[in-house]
Length: 340
Ligand SMILES: [Zn+2]
View 1 (cartoon, rainbow, N blue to C red):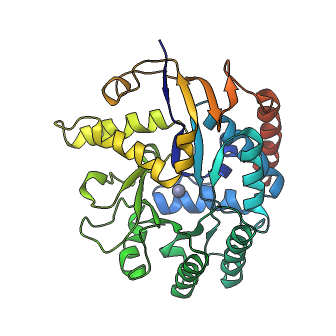
View 2 (cartoon, protein in one colour; view 1 turned 90 degrees about the horizontal axis):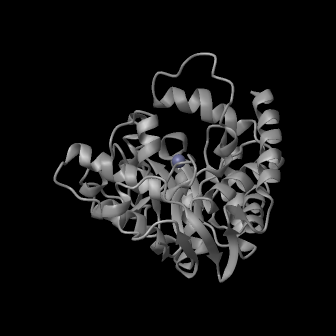
């Protein structure tokens, strides 16, 4: 028995994190989210070059197809390889056969010049005719000037902004810092510590596995009036698994809830990347409905079509050699880990 759905959408990904697996442990065990950023992600992103970015995106895109995900909203940062990074990611995803909506997440952690170059990368990529968002890492790592410049650039280019909001307690001032800047086409990732009654416009991106892994708390997204979509925050792109986690996490605080809210968050992904509706995934399971999937492990795609072209069948991608992608990604991961 098989069933068919449109391609699934991962509404918050960091493709560069595909090479983090197996990285050497930090000198000191991080004890909170800020230390996880400082000792893991901010060491990793500064070590990235374009070749590593290419193969992490290839691996991430391959894993997306293997999960029936045909569209990825990516948030990228590589402070020592800014120029060309978005083109590298877009080319890798196109090669595998996955749609991507990238953004370069600007930050003032490396000075005003780093933020300016990040903005320029967003601007260059979008002005070359590519679909993308303007990225901001988070309010707590940016000056007011940078936040305003990013919002102004997004306005000028007619696109939204993709930003982390109140993921940890270090960013609780985000609603004040972003006051008056957000629009309905902004993507606000995490929002764990965002008050229920807040002033921000945009779609809230819920990342259940990542939030559990970082012990930042439960966002309880059902409390918000904003639309909510599901992401992975860089831990693969298996959206059926994200849905299952979103459901059971909500259930952990409200035993009366069913899987329909979490399923609707999965469906919001199609509002962000409507072209994924033109894709077709044939699944190993029938029916693909929330009550079944919430309790059925191991559901996998048998075939994936993007715009009518078969890009995945018999457990393999058709455009690239999965073994080669994994081997090259492993080589780049070894280079990256040696730099840490
Ligand atoms: Zn993130």
